Length: 184
Figure 1 (cartoon, rainbow, N blue to C red):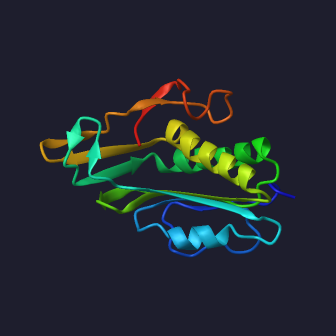
Figure 2: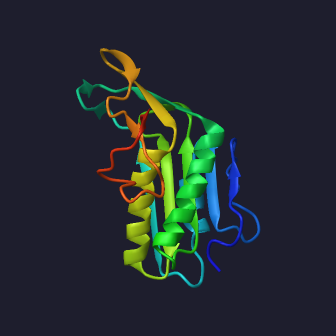
């Protein structure tokens, strides 16, 4: 039954997929994220919909042209706990979801490096798309991860910093006004 098996998580993850019958792959890592591995790991026989989102470092941000790279920091234990809560809440909202991978990079990232991966499998595409979109939006709004940008004219913490929200609140995700500051 979805949601009844423990999540596999780590603070320093390798490129190994979770072992056994885990339904969640949750990790914070200072090493490159295994995008293809996460996407293939969520594939299971009962699911025909698989959605993978990979967020990469781009060369600009609002008011900051010539971005050269980013540095992410995380409050690791609470971040992993919050990501685990997020996966459980996604299953509550979309009961058909089978596997969820939520992976986030920390440390220095260069242009085009992958910063975050969300992969979700569900029996049908609508459920997979909705759950994956909610997961990335809610991860950004609720997980204590911050980014510092380096651009042509300087460096500084992301201008899109927002208060951290509650994973299970009705407003979690897009448009929610959370309660503590964070940036990612």
